[in-house]
Amino acid sequence: MLSFRAIGTIGSNMRRSLAVLCTFSFCALLNTVAPAQPAADPGAAERQFARQMAREHGLDAAAVLEILHRATYRQSVIDTMMRPAEAKPWKDYRPIFVTDRRVADGAAFLDDNRDLLERVGQQYGVPPEIITAIIGVESNYGRTPMRYRVLDALVTLAFYYPPRQDYFRSELAQLLLLNSAAFPYAPDALMGSYAGAMGWPQFMPSSVAKYARDGDGDGKIDLWNSLPDICASVGNYFEAFGWQTGGPVALRAQVAANARTLAPKGLDPVYPLQQLAEWGYSADAKLDPATPATLLRLDGADGPEFWITFRNFQVISRYNKSPLYAMAVFQLSEAIAAAARAP
Image (cartoon, rainbow, N blue to C red; front, side, top):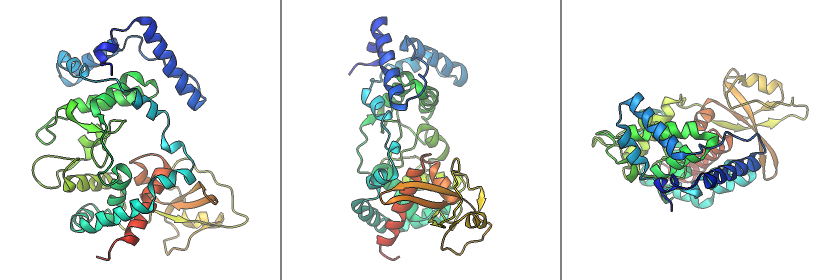
């Protein structure tokens, strides 16, 4: 692997070739207008970033550059970003996460940690099966290997992935600002996902800063080895984004033959249930007709599926904006709750 220091020394022609190749691949995938070209000199972009960190946050620019130069470029990070699972239709996405094995492992996880999960659930108002499902989808209950150094992933995306470089530079900045008594880890020692997400709950650095919690009271936040910290952080995340305790998540819709065609943009619940029913979309549930909801259409294995989704479904999507992700978490949580032992 080339280090970023090594990449910064390659010739200008090679840098331009890499830039063209990266841009062409992204355009071919999305069939859209070409994004801005990567910096002709990644080293210059790093130096600019270091100066910005010094100016805005008081860090030493030379020290920031020294940390960046510890990073290793990971082409596999770019490759994975360009083929997200969320690009699949629901019929192909669901089998990735809602499997017999993941349900059984989730039920066992819930049974083995029920006291902790119920305590966290009561504190944050989030059902134990939802917390369990998030951990199951994000890290397969801690079994998914953390293959990437977070620093490698974020530096690769911050300086070599133009479509979202602003976002990943902000996350890289937050990574460098995280070190504290509660989070005493060197930036180049942290392991995570190809996108720089950390630990079992797969928190990006900005989420660690805002929502991670010390659940075991030892004065530190450990999202890799402390189940109390992991569960409390997930619960706090959901509470912070407005999880409604006891509220519905999603219901399969019964569609009338003359149902009005609806194509809502986004997952914001903007229609009262009664309005959806009048338009031909109803569900067997005793809920206030004024309950805000929206309609979601998915391409299922047996044809189109229509779902009535609520505020809590939208809250799940704050973890990952894809409605496929939110539905996978919801359905996995339902299956786990059904398979777990009765409390």
